[in-house]
Length: 574
Image (cartoon, rainbow, N blue to C red; front, side, top):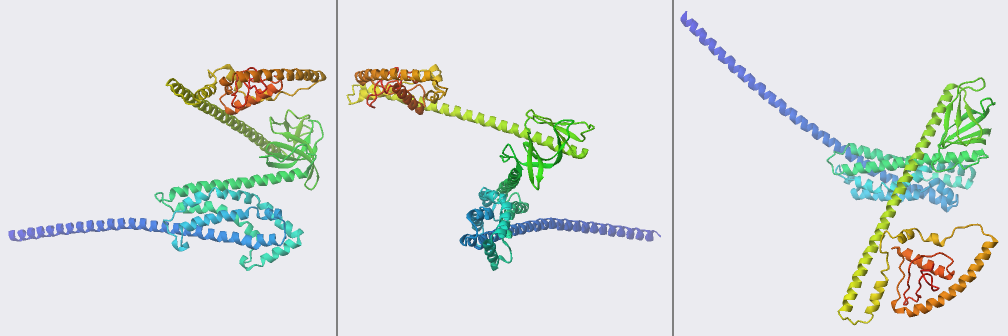
């Protein structure tokens, strides 16, 4: 029994060892499987990233190819438009140049712009589509051409006029219609008509932001073309927004022009910069709370309300105009005679302006729209005032800078003049006997008759324009004024002759010490004006006011020396 028990224990121990060994092997197998799974997952993440990168590159290449191919085809379509339509219509005299421009606007200018853009793309893809790769950079090409695309604003604004002109010419000119039918028979058009080609430039310029947005989606941030594309996207979007705004402005202007032609008896010009029509409708106008209302058609503009009476299809007679400047809207309570009404108050109105509507909802909407127009008008005026104030401050700063620059230049010239004088004096003291040395010193000293102080009252007086001295104020003249002026003129001529003789004598006596005229203003143009003023004053016998400063003229320049108006050419005439 003991032996059997021992055998059983041994067998049990062996079984337990085998079980432990099996469990160890299983754990090792599980760990190996886990490692294999982790490695497979890592490999799958890398594979996913690689597949994503390849997909992005493929998409980027496809968009680059689309940009290049569509631009090439677009330029070809523009060339076809000129070759098949513009040139034949012009050469056959089917329409004059003004009519051609109304139809095609600046299309021929746009061709040059887009051909230049296509050349930029061809420089990036020298071998065409086959040379397009995902690493290509086109951001700078768009950025360089963005400003040129602004020329599309003129073309897009003319779109409605263009299509209308084609229809008009087809109806009224058989020659134009015949020529256009001949053009449509060209097989290169593939069955398309002129209108289809006229709209292509608008479609193209609006497509650029979409293409750039797509290519940015598939361009990683670390790509060298990412920053240029971002800048190009911003510039192209600004251009397109500007074009759309210009088109809306032009369409609004066309509506204002049509409105002006439809209204008879207008006391003012409706066409004005920035003026747009915001609303129109049929209402009832009352001059007082008890008056019978008149049916009117109301036009609401950005700064004006125009009331008219209808006299035909799109024909009106002017009744009343109310400016939105300092305009107020008052909602009125319903009465026995007037319901659903509001009043427009403005200081310049001679009578009350009460407007009634068909129902309360319509009145509420009109009041809401008019209040919005009034607030927008007031905001616009405030913006304009702020901009004008800013411009005035900028002009003032520029004037100060200019005056400071003039003062600095004058100080520099004065310093140089003083240095020259000291050098000449040093040479004279050293015994230099060079010919003309004393004359040079005298000229340098004469040129230095500048103001001694920057705050001199004389300089402050002459800092204003001297033109005011030459331009006397106009006033009503009487016979006594004419007689007095004639008498003063005779006395002035006698005094001029006497001063001329005295001035010539004194000029000869002071030839060696004659000096150049320098006014108390550093600006050279002011000096010349002062000399001219003095000459006119001397010629008029001192009747016209001049500069009350000492002035001396160089004898070498052929002038006489004048002091206080002495001499015909004296620049210091009183």
